[in-house]
Length: 148
Image 1 (cartoon, rainbow, N blue to C red):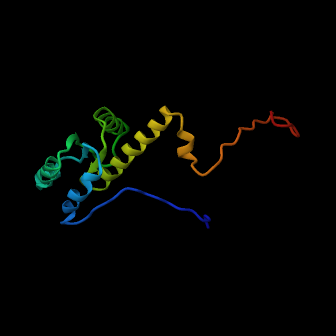
Image 2 (cartoon, helix red, strand yellow):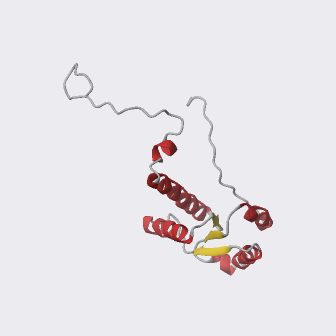
Image 3 (tube, rainbow, N blue to C red):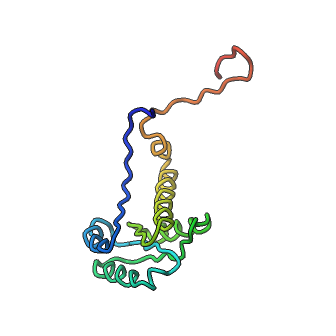
């Protein structure tokens, strides 16, 4: 047993034919810049891309396109997504596609969050939010030695 804990995952996932209808409800909750993440282009072939772009434009959003997410994205692709989000000041990362696209979008968000905390020198509060900061004890390599 792992003990008592609380896990919070603020990612929202909408599935199904009517999932685009929820986009109009969600978009007003975020700022103007939306990073649209998708894969190899199947959303353009099946018409979803045009519908999503229409909804984004109707809500007055600036779209930062991040296309070409492949299955098991490379580190270089992940860095590209982070660059797009950072330079475009993305307020929302919207993943349209399958599992790799969703996982990629979550990874971009997580890296940006950690990078921001590093710049603010608050990364330890993020990594260990429930622990008090403890001093590091380094021991000499001998038996019965006291910590330095």
